[in-house]
Image (cartoon, rainbow, N blue to C red; front, top):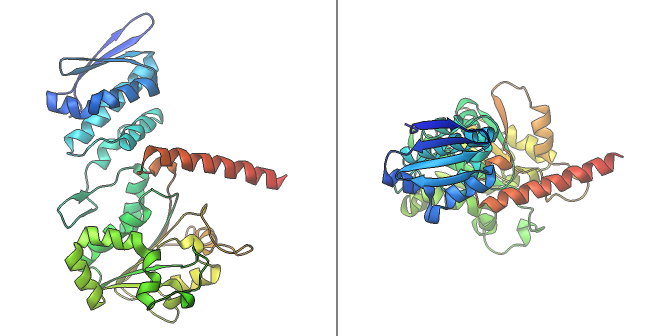
Amino acid sequence: MTGTCRQEERITATRYTIETGGLDRLQKVLGIFDENLVTIARELELFTKVEGTNIVLEGEAENAALGKEVIESLLAIVEAGDNIDKSSLLYCIELAREGHASDIGSLMHGVVAVSSRGKPVKCKTVGQKEYVSAIKGNTVTFGVGPAGTGKTYLAVCLAVAAYKGKQVEKIILTRPAVEAGEKLGFLPGDLQTKVDPYLRPLYDALQEMFGLETYAKLMEKGVIEVAPLAYMRGRTLSNAFVILDEAQNATREQMKMFLTRLGDGSKMVVTGDLTQTDLPEGKTSGLKQAVTILKGVEDIAIVTLTEKDVVRHPLVMRIVRAYEKAETIRSKGEKR
């Protein structure tokens, strides 16, 4: 249910009156101190006001129509029982501008997994939905995109769901440990202690999905295995959900080695951000090579997420865009 509306054409403006269906729904759509409505008015250059439990939008015909679609998308989010934050609001506006406002409705249905506290995990963007579908439908999936797009978190959620559904017997997490420019052998402690700092995002997601106590027991039993990428050599990974995180820091040799570890009954997810490579000068990212040469190979999916799929603070989206713009300018300069 997206509410009903009345349209009135004027000489200079179009006016929509959107029925929200009740005070509670109205308040959730408006946000604290009507901040959501203020944002819509600013972004789409509209006059807005509230009449009873109705929202009134007025402005140029195209902008008013976009505003109506945004409000209806927000009502769909509320109806699904989800909260509206600034990121989801801006995403609704972006989708409306692109003519895909109706896609919001499809995101509200379908749960990726359920956390240990019973909270359903859902896709928040169209790109995330494509990514999740790719993982479910393929043996190997590459998720490439900027920080904050949920690549790692969603992969872990699906790994947990696969384990709970008895589709796999183990969850294996791995990551190249090169960010700090340190060799593991020079770091203090045993293997677990050495790689822990590099795999903290994966640990956090696993603890949220399993609960701290269950997570600890599964780690102790070896059901959840954590190891640096270099330690994968010579193994065959069978009946496991394997996640390679920060894969942009894998060399070409490491990437080939990792992909050829695949055993029967396993699923692999490779995530990374090609704009954040920490490899030494002159080293080519194995992720960059893999997504090029494996494109079109059966049972391998390559999903590219963009700044539109960033679900962290809205400022992160603008930061990503600024860096991508600078990188484009730099690349064009190098080609001259």
